Amino acid sequence: MAVKRKPAAAPAADKQANAQQAKRLARADQVVGTLWPLFEQLLADDGLSAQPLAEQYAQMTGVYFRKIRNGRVLSTVDYTIAVDMCTAARRALRSMDNSLAFDGHPLGEALRNIAAQAHQVLMDHYNLSTKPGRPLPP
Image (cartoon, rainbow, N blue to C red; front, side):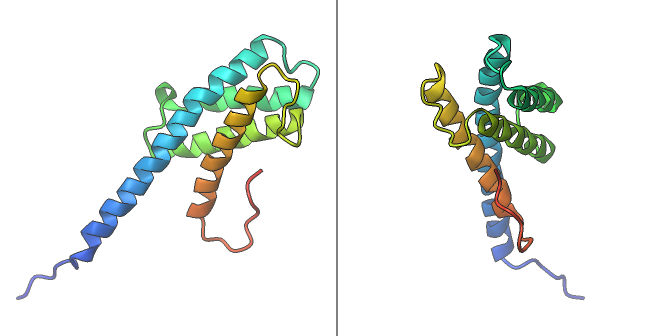
């Protein structure tokens, strides 16, 4: 009886998929590590007290951050939570300034930078989906 073997291309495809997943996890981990301290600073300085919706979304980023084990994105479960965290962060930032320019804000450059990084994580996640007609992330 002959033994069936996997085609030789399958391990190469698996390696490529694993490498892409590792890149996504690393990018999400880096963004989570940058995003939460910035939002924590905004919340501590009452920088969002005049904008209650932005403050609520910023608080949600903290809820998601605490759900991520040890604050590190090391698995697909952590990655999913990081995507939710980035979504809440982008919504908070849009509530602060819909254009994401943050002109005149003392942390303007950091906020613009984290907005772009969070958007990249959301686009990575968006590109994983094959659902037609799915709306673009915020």
